[in-house]
Length: 223
Ligand SMILES: *Cc1c(COP(=O)(O)O)cnc(C)c1O
Image (cartoon, rainbow, N blue to C red; front, top):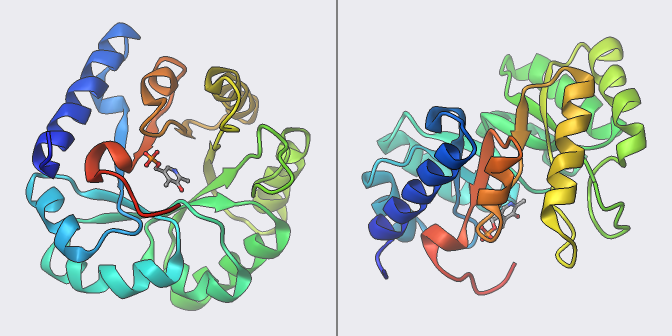
């Protein structure tokens, strides 16, 4: 299977089967095609195969690729799934429909200010560092509740869900279950979890948004 349409169809089939196995409706699971490091030429066939939801992890890269693609395909929904710096918040608010990586007060404040300034309201998720890895972005689990309170009560930001990236050397299921529990505690419905290697597990544990790069686009050079 070396063309992207076939790979996309295969991923969709696996989503359908995982949803069925978990007793869930397929429509509850939104597929985000992660197009980081791939060019417009690689992305267009995937759009033409009917995919509308895409993810990028760098604001600058997304800004270079997506405005032109979106002009031709206005129904595209763009998700930011990589860490955000405060000096990139203006571009992020202008470009993305959903931001999965709100993870500290400074970023939340910068997003709030930009949303007011631009009159745009991307939907927001909080990234949780479920493995408490020092090199990884995200709020640690025990601080999640306070951070969401801060976003809601101090800033009036509507947080719709949580996102995590499990440590590569650990059982992903434990991290997905932890994220689901945290979301339930907070009354949040959106769970962004699961990548090419573990999305069936994530679906079994309640993922509403899965982020799939390699299984659709093939191997990246790096990252
Ligand atoms: C790159 C990336 C993905 C996609 O990973 P694959 O293993 O290629 O499916 C998902 N989520 C995040 C945050 C990423 O950076």
